[in-house]
Length: 237
Length: 240
Image (tube, helix red, strand yellow):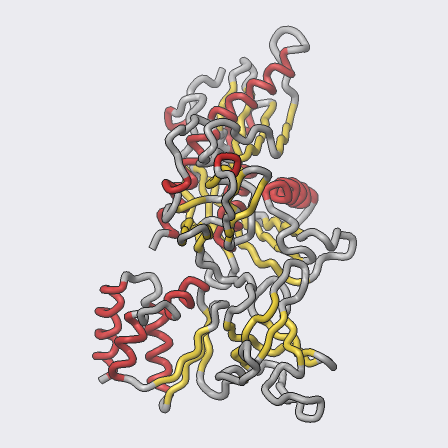
């Protein structure tokens, strides 16, 4: 029964997040993001002229390259590339610069759990740094489901390996608006892994998933504010 | 997301905004024409932000987002520094640090005819004016001003070109004269061409002056005006 987390974290508590922009001098946009010990570096090049052969020339094309910390590039890396590409395609405005390609290169510096959310934050910050037009920002959170049915947010590597199931969700970030009502709802990306077996009956599994979504949604606003504060303090001159 | 009933468009002006922020609600402003500059887009009934930066407003009705990037978004009327990449039958292909290459028609020079087409090699640095910049099309350039005169446009010979951000170019071109250039100009004699696409060209009689001017400009980018003056004077002291 894992009720105690490392460092005395609560079930809903996230690790300290740090984000910095413009870390690479040659890239058109770059950012480094860390969730606790997990660190990811992202670089953006573009928009550059021309799209790939099978892509729609009336829209901009996004290309993601995922570089693991060590080892050769294989299927897991391709999967991450595809997930990140679909997520970023949702947040980028693709008809502002038609027939161009934007390349995003993600380099894993250290993986201590919650890798995909960290990569999504780093890629978003790098896109902001490069000045690529975006619809909104994405904030992402991962949670794992313990055997006792408890949901832990932002697991580290040990927790991820011990638990049977984990979910990674990406939401549109909260925005400052002059409108009094109407916030952006919805999920951009959801990635589940493992078996969510409830203790008693079968229908608990779906409820567990929705509960993960609700807990993730509750964490959007504080997460957005932290990220914006980190990015703001650097761009102000 | 909690609602903020007292947020008016004026509270966002000169503030840092992020993509997705809604800054204007058009349904509340009837019968007004608003001009949107870069970084903003119309999304149904609201104006939302596309790029992170500071929201600016100029009377009577112009809104835009000011941000400093390494890449340039071409817009008509800008003076930029381009590098020739290729020469075709009708155009030169010029790189202006934008999403696509720009075309410089072969006849867009003062007194240009088919018989005296200039010969620019690959890598020639040009000071040009952006004539047209529409989405989906390659921007069009010209080496003449609006009235057809040459007016300083054309190839830049000798000197040294360095790249920086668009924000620095705007600071260097601001009026009244930017403190860095003013302080440097009091003691040194040099020529400078600033492109709004983040490229700057400097030329002077001796290489040491060129190096000093270029390094000073690059190093004082993030300082306030007062700090800039102090830094420039200290760098010039070291030279004497």
